[in-house]
Length: 176
Image 1 (cartoon, one colour):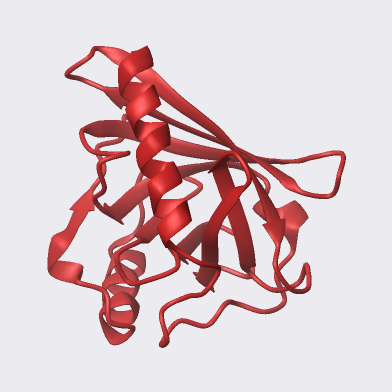
Image 2 (tube, rainbow, N blue to C red):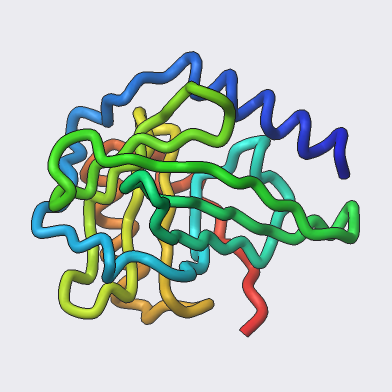
């Protein structure tokens, strides 16, 4: 596990080094964001695949506040090929106002990448559509291990309109 986790951290580091704190040109962060409503556990429903998550199922992200005003991030997923859980701890901070869904996140030292919430269930905080610094990074997160068909359709439609390669989206296996 240590070698695989080390490789994942290196890949994340390279990603963060080669990226910036921008976002795809057709992506705009949500406004009226409330961090306290976003905190807690989220299930990864769909994503564009990357080597640092490849082969992982039952992927979750947990967000909690840090003493310095930032957000603690714990990503967790199960590797069937290694028959073990893998975790990555990170930190995130707002780039502009704390009411805008635009954060910078780091899992590797002082290097940060964008975390852009471009769609959100503002009423109940039950799903979120996330982008990274470019159109190679895309996630659908939910408070539950599955989502309604309408949410998935909205995710596909909005992502396609913003230039993401929706034909490459993978759906994450979650245990209910």
